[in-house]
Image (tube, rainbow, N blue to C red):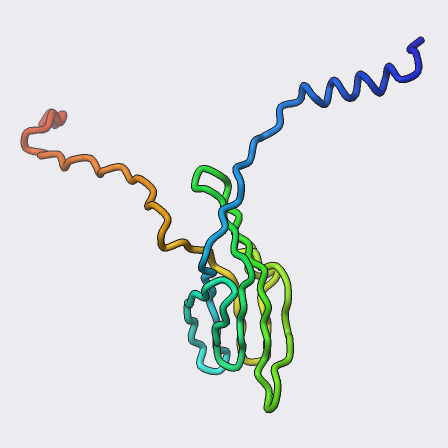
Length: 151
C-alpha cells in the first residue's frame, strides 16, 4: 500500500520527465498585411497598415493594434488584434474587434454586406532577409556522365 502523497509525487516527477517542445518567442511586427474583397466589383486588394495606425478599405476603417508572427524555423502562426469600424453618415460604428489568424482566415474575417477583410500576414521591412541557398549550377548534358541507350 502506498503512503498518502506518494501518488501525487510520482505524477509530478513523471511530468518533469516528459519532454516539452520549446517555442520561440513571437515576433512583434510593425506592419499588418490584409486582403480585402469588394463584393460589388469582385476585386481583391492586398494592403498593409502600420500598427496603431488606421487604413481604409472602402467604407471600413481598419486599425491593427499588434501583429505577431513566429520565426521561419517554427510552425507558422500569424495573429493580429484588429478593430474595424464602418463609416456611416455622421459617425463610425464598430463592426469587429478581435484576433485575426492568417492561417485560418475564415475563422475571424470581417464579413460585411459589401466588403470582406482578412489578415494574410505580418511584415517587418527592416528585418534581415533569410538566407537562401544558391541554386545548383546547370549541368551540361553533352559532357555529363549519362547512360546511353543500347541501340
